[in-house]
Image 1 (cartoon, rainbow, N blue to C red):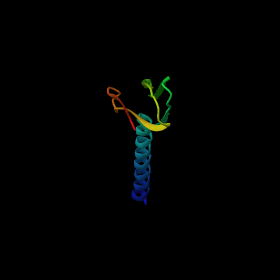
Image 2: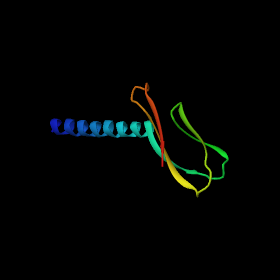
Image 3: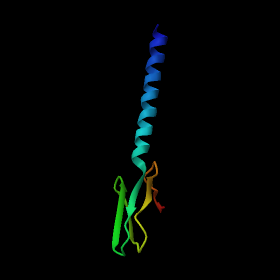
Image 4: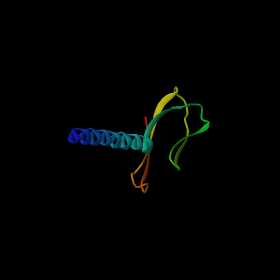
Length: 87
């Protein structure tokens, strides 16, 4: 019976560690959508992960509103930060 109890505790702890690992990685990377507004006016869109921030400044002329994407990410050791913008 002690072996079964130890196995259950091990499985529960393993599940908790996997859950915490997934939760932590979700806070380290994200992709968000933003609206690029036409009209020639300068706009800035900013997104952050922890204390790191990425800003995209643009002026769009003509056309209609477009949905663009910004992806920000931080490595597990907090040494590499990345930022990408695309449509």
